[in-house]
Image 1 (cartoon, rainbow, N blue to C red):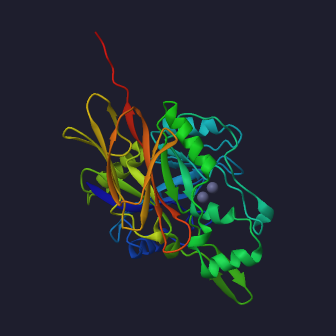
Image 2: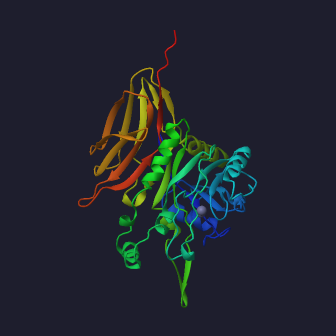
Length: 354
Ligand SMILES: [Zn+2]
Ligand SMILES: [Zn+2]
């Protein structure tokens, strides 16, 4: 099994980011990433720059819609018409164009200090036919913190980890609800990196650089084969893993999550995240957390099944359901912090026919 870290939802100079795609690739290589996904607003202008660059697979998609209902598309080769008012049309257009799509920052709250609190949430529920949803977006999370300016400055300069409270619980419930009702919605984590440049008197500063942001919320893909060195093959592999949910989200500031794994074993059949298996024989769920200071939570169809401080467990599933894993980091003092969120493994009911 092979695990590769990547960063999704990045803005370049083709829209409102401050860095070129070449600069983004350099930052990604320095951060040890295997792939990045550029998602500029309403443009595929970066598409000719797709390549394997400094060992990093650079893919270009787009972020569609303007004032609300932002949607990330990947695997399309022509721009898709926006439709803020009817986002189902955008989802369908991306699908018809052969692409995959993810709902971006669905519960965005905006910032008290930027653009007078303007927010970009997803307003139209329910929608169907989308591949996945961003459960944790680094920039949106920071914008949505509404403490005093003093507290924001404290977090920024002294305790950036402390500001990251994990994905909104109601968003996780929404995701579980879709999956428990027969949909297969993939969860991704993203940076929404812009590396905004702020002007202060005669100098300018970048608050969250690309290099820094690539060490925050990443999405790892998991595959049975190695990532190809050929661009076209590697692109197909990454899109396939993301569309099927062979991936997990990690808040990397707490530690690299490369050693995390969540699989199901039935006989000699190994099922990865995003996969399904019918309950026709004994199924063992295997969970491995990276490092000893972790807390594993196993969730079945939205309900907590077990919680353990053991770094590695095997759990025999005794009923069908949508199984997923959350890992928390346990500091020496203070509360455990949200760290890793897996995609589900789907265990289908045993079917009896005479
Ligand atoms: Zn957006
Ligand atoms: Zn964005």
